[in-house]
Amino acid sequence: MGRNRIRKRGKSINRASALVLLLLSIIMIFLIVQNNFSINDLTSPVVPLHKSNSGAPVKFRIVIDAGHGGKDPGATGASGAYEKDSNLSLAFRVNELLGQDPMFETKMTRTDDQFIELVDRSKLANEWKADAIISLHGNTYEDQEVSGTETLYEQEHSIALATALQNQVSKALGTRNRGVKQDEYIILTTAEVPAVIVESGYLTNPDEEEMLLSSQGQQTVADAIHKALKKFYKGKQPFHLTVPSESP
Image (cartoon, rainbow, N blue to C red; front, side, top):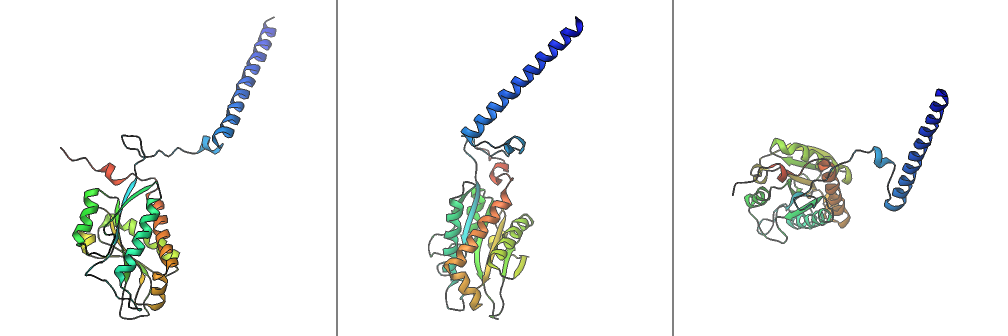
């Protein structure tokens, strides 16, 4: 009798397990059909979004600086074109790409042909508690054969960002990778946030200038900057969330 009870109980347990498995299968099928749910979602780690008090995702803040402007034309290219114009055109392209990406929000230091003091450009980034200020430039040298992409930084906390941008832009353009270099330009020394100057190429090199002034060339640089920033900030916390709020 005792053995019979044990067998009956075992059968009951097996039936209950089968019912549980069937129920779980039905739930899984429902989720897959209704919500585009993937089996991988059960095993993939959940990456939390940074959110504000209102519940909206918090974005990374990027200040885009079009180098030179107004009374300061910057370099004169091999064709006679002014650097300030190509810088502004590129800045608009970068701003548009980042503005369409929910991961970022942007501010531009200038949106037309005007001269902005360098300290005011970095001040904008400092007061906004930006995650970075990226100054866009074209390079110049007396020897027209010199070419390549390089990115400048001054403070140690800017090295990683400079390296990420340098490698991505140079790779996308197929230019000589001249690396990242430390320099003491005002916009780099007065910025309290990571600050870099991206020199996409040499405007004094006829071939490189033609590429950098073309619509395709500028879009290539803009896409590379966007891609580099997405990779660089993935998994990081926006800078303004890590800074203690000021006392009222």
